[in-house]
Image (cartoon, rainbow, N blue to C red):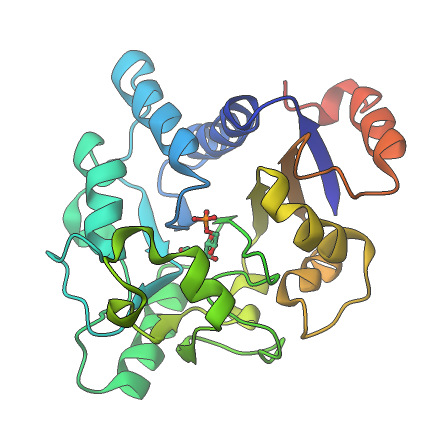
Length: 261
Ligand code: F6R
C-alpha cells in the first residue's frame, strides 16, 4: 500500500482529484467507484472545479457508489442518492443512466445485490475506487468480521457507525440499521483503490489498516493485499503510524516516471 501524508484534507483531496482526472483523460469511459460520507467532499468539489474550469468531461464516465441505507428512497435528504446528487452529480455532465447507487427501497435485497455486482462486471469492472474509512475500520459498510471475499449484500451497522454517521438523522432511532454495501471482495476487484482519511478520529483505524495484521476485524486491512492501493491521509489521521518517516521518504523520492505531482 502506498501511504501519502498531506498537510491538510484539501491537499489530499486535490491529489486524489488529480489522479481521477488523469484516469479520465487517459480513459474517457472510466468506471469510478465512489464513496459517500464527509471525507470525499473536498475531492468532489475539486472534480466539479476541474469540470467547470478545465473542461474535465464526465460524459462517458460510469459510477458505482459503495452503499445506501435500506429504507431510504432517492429523494430522501438523508439518503446517499440525495447526498451524491447534491455534492457531485448535479454539478457535472455525467448522464443519469451511467450513475449507479444501490436501491435502498428494493423489495428483493438479494436480487438487487446480485444485479449490482452484475452491472459492475458488465461495465468492465471498477477502474478506480474511492474509499473512506470508518472509525471501526470499515470500508463501504463492511463492518468488523465482514467476509474479506464478500460481494454486494445487506449488512447491519455497528453502534459505533450509527453514532458516527447520524449527522443527518434527528435521532439515533431514525438511523437505518441496515445498508446495502459492496463487499470487501467487490472492492478488492477494483483496478486501483484510493482510500482517504482525515482527522484525529480516524488515526486508530488508519494505523490498524496500514500497519496491523490483515483481519476481518479491520476490513480496510485487506488493502494490504491490493496490488494498487493508495492511502492519502492528513497529519492528524497519520498520527499513530510508526513508519511515517519512511512513507514520506518514499513519496519524496519516487522516480520521475512514477510521480503524481
Ligand atoms: C460511505 C462509506 C463509508 C464512509 C465511512 C467514513 O459511502 O462507504 O465507508 O466512507 O463511514 O465516513 P465519513 O467520511 O463521513 O467519515
